[in-house]
Length: 101
Image 1: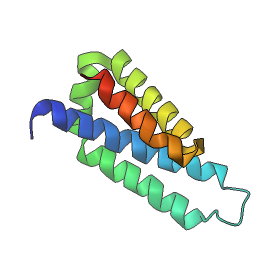
Image 2: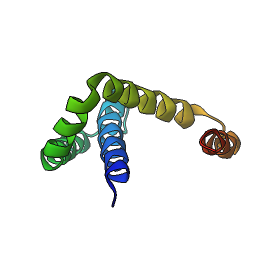
Image 3: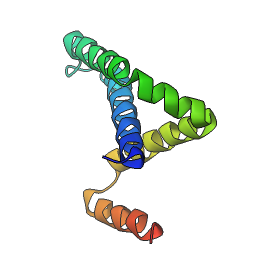
Image 4: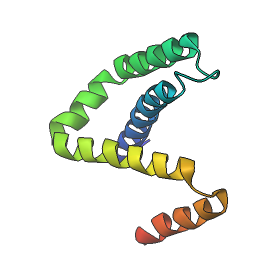
């Protein structure tokens, strides 16, 4: 795996783990909330962070501002997609893919 792909994978994993953990808070006052799930997600996030610590530090040292923008953007995109009509998600994917051409 090349360095660019590795960096993208690390960013995706961290952003997804963090968002998953935070989104469980939304369920807190519902019958779907389970403290054991919240604890497990936090443990997963910590384990992931510990495992990728060296690579994370490298990415933050290169450009911390950009890393924050990436994490924030991923979070925004995921939140928008989660409330979007499922028939429109494919269109969003096509728009994103065509921007890179």
